[in-house]
Amino acid sequence: MSSKEPEEGFDDILAELDREEARIRVRTEMRRFGKPTTVVEGLKMNEKDLQELGTKMKKILATGGTVKDGVIILQGDHRDRVVEILVKQGFSEGSIEVI
Image (tube, rainbow, N blue to C red; front, side, top):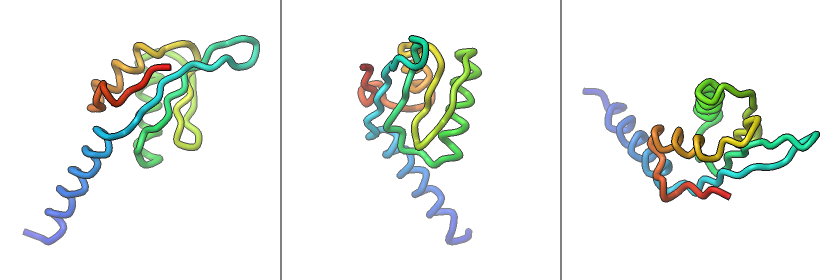
């Protein structure tokens, strides 16, 4: 048994705690030409995981979007479905605030 194995388990536990304690805000904004966009903020994830989550959301919702500066931006008003996706990904429903 190597000394790295316990550390990896500890990192997983810390990541899970961060996920449970995160204050995630899901809101809509009107962008150019009056088009609504859904903005997901407050996700405490590294850039790679955030990109993967953004890609997964775009695929499930069949919409376009981007990930910039730690924020996921999706085309259209998808607040309710984004909450469902986040809960399925392991985020606590109580930590998700819909505005």
